[in-house]
Amino acid sequence: MRVGLISDTHNLVRPEALDALRGVDHIVHAGDICRRDVLDTLAQLAPLTVVRGNNDMADDIATLPEHVRIELAGATLHVVHDIADVPATLDGIDVVVTGHSHKPLIERRDGVLFVNPGSAGPRRFKLPITIALLDIDGERIDARIVQLTQ
Image (tube, rainbow, N blue to C red; front, side, top):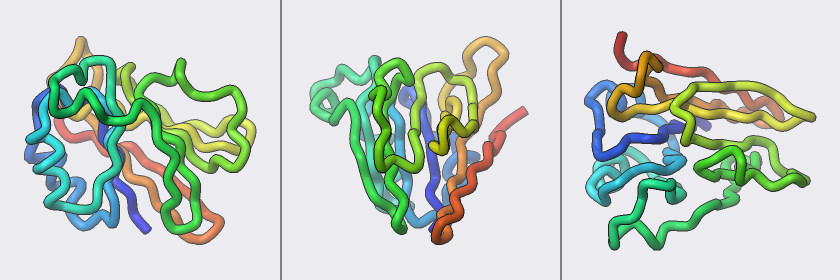
């Protein structure tokens, strides 16, 4: 199963992001969406799981959950916008997906894969514009960062 990870779109759905997400089996948005139409566009590509970010205050998205735990292809993902809000105990969690910092990150901590897809929205400072792809194949879970623009 291939999962597209995206975060910090801040009202912007780049065509490059849509191209990179085409063909995924599921999309996870880790917050800072800012407008419902961003989700409507992504939902046309694949089933969608979403959490609210610190900038998601519009009435139609303010009720989104702050965190969610989902199972995809036998892997359990914990999704939350800010890594500071990740619970101390991650029993049963295979992957933690965060956003907020706009800095792409893939690392393993105590057997848990942490992925921040970076920001697919407006450029912030000199940080890259990115998403991530997560491949789940039985016990094997791999992630990679996809740079969308130079």
